[in-house]
Length: 420
Image (cartoon, rainbow, N blue to C red; front, side):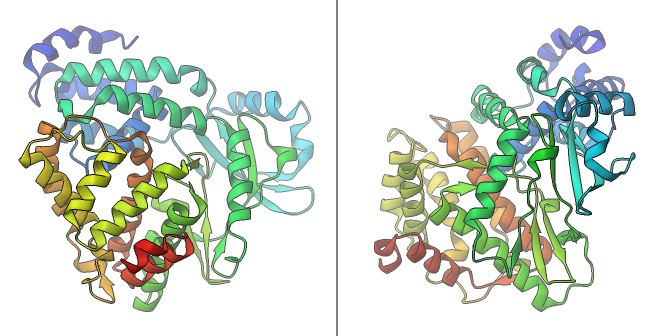
């Protein structure tokens, strides 16, 4: 259970609510950060899902707590790390490596990464899962749900229970490194023909297990951490990342859904984009993709009637919404599709875009008047599409979005939508 002062403050927080509640006093903020750091994977997954789902509409105190949890990078002590390695790779796990750096180079929500070298001389990254993370998913998410409900800071339109259920599924995937290895192999197969642009690491199964995954070490730097890009490079990077995102939707029906910008590296030595982190990869049902792509295509034609019809087919709308809700939903879809509009500039300048702010303006109405939660598939899909847009905006990329979209419709076999 949550325990301690946090539990004591629940009843007072329920009574007071809001930013001034006892739950969010400075002292309890410190205790809350400490508690959530112990359920780090669950807390960060929930923050990620809720912020992208609703355009960062989380209340300020919740945003602050989650950001502080994210910034708190705690590494495993070496004895604990070695116990995980032994249970996955055997007592002689060190014999697999020529070199193994003792200090991690990174820590994420459910594991940490070490640089190493296989006996073959191949540089690799070894991701090791924190002990107990997978076993604690259910209890951590249950406790987090109690905590967030008690603060009374989240609007009911967030459908917290469904969001938690979705987080439960995704965290289960991300804690299964054997599944991630298979997803990585599948993605590499899908990317055949893209080798001149994208580099997908090889997974080394002989040095991998349920809680350990070893893959090629990527030499590039996160695209948002390079300050020396020319405008041409910014345009190229934004174009390739958005093009890949559209291919994942319209062609692959399979997507790496984590939009974290550090998952996209640029290697100046070979002028390639390197892709990381396939734990949250997932497949989308063809029926869902067909309806979703047609929804985007209808929005690109500003066909409000078709947007409404397809939104009902997908489950965004029930058909009984108020005019206010209907206008807000259709407005948000049309805004999201703005770069793909037939009337959009040939070269869409993301440095001038206000898409995210305008979509954000519709959120209060939708949270208040939404009659049904969004379809499960869109939690992750919108997170990735929004992340691609935000990355282009962060870089200041200029992208031929309209052409990319029409090409993706054709390549995906949606010729009717491309011609409409």
